[in-house]
Length: 194
Figure 1 (tube, rainbow, N blue to C red):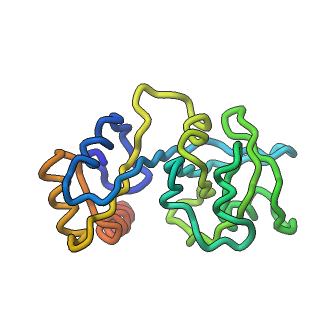
Figure 2: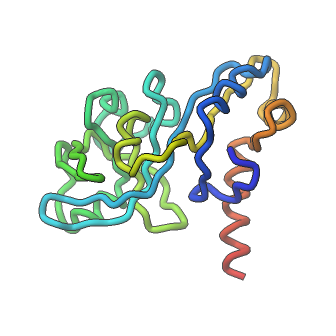
């Protein structure tokens, strides 16, 4: 991620070559792209809300929610499909029974809800939507650079902490373990509140 990133909702688009830099680190088992955007989701009856969209690697869906209240995360491979978190669904459809197949509009693109995730509530009140990377790019206005984050897994015998240090040293990008990034986000919001 960009070296000055302080928390998850703060993204600076990266060059696609940054993914190749991370993949070029010998200690990396695999690395995939992730896109993050904040578009507006609208229902057919006119309700709308800001949402946080995570665009997942098309080939692997790395980062897709595996524990769903309803639906199957693998349905994200279907065209125009999204998974929405339960709290976000209830915000868009208050008092209504949860059901799959409803349509949402994101930047003039109509998508179908194929799953409801049990994602933990975030610090912000944004809906959380998961989609394939190539789908998610269409939910936000295009920029010259689109890549938000690179997700990487260490090779066997390499710890996540060591891999993060190596990626930072060899690529010049900021690399944090999942835990350290989570705590950086908590710290950011904690500092904002004080």
